[in-house]
Picture 1 (cartoon, rainbow, N blue to C red):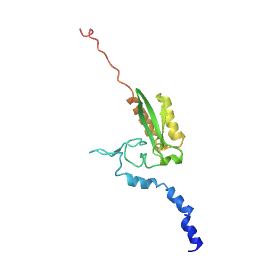
Picture 2 (picture 1 turned 135 degrees about the vertical axis):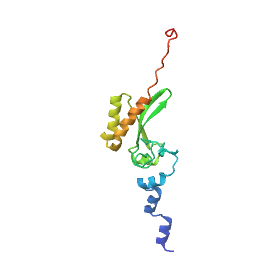
Picture 3 (picture 1 turned 30 degrees about the horizontal axis):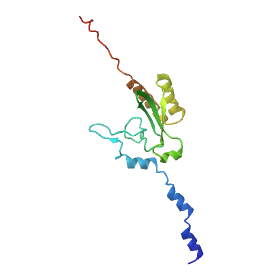
Picture 4 (picture 1 turned 30 degrees about the vertical axis):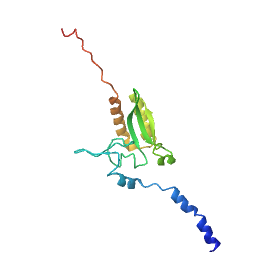
Length: 165
């Protein structure tokens, strides 16, 4: 055997190692076509649109526009309960590309103020001001209002026993 052949067999080509160790990210359209019919977040029921419970899905509909799994930009407003305290949380995709391969660090949760004026300003800044999902700015404002009203507790009305007599 020649010495050049032995060297190629013992030392692998660096180009091959790079392509094997770092897989290229698939296109969002391809991922959606693979995931749209069957994934663990889909919720189906009769006479209803197909819903989705994935994190990062603003409307809860199973569609490419709102999906937090497939696109590069996830966006969601939700309530997070810690003990007795309930907070409004804005979920977005992490800006660092290295976190995209780590499911635990892929999404970033940011607290939103409950004051209507300040909270809506935060949502507007996160969408329109940062050029991040400006198409969802109106829907995010509507969902913020709905989430905020869902946090209100019903006041307990105590009837007086003496007043009715």
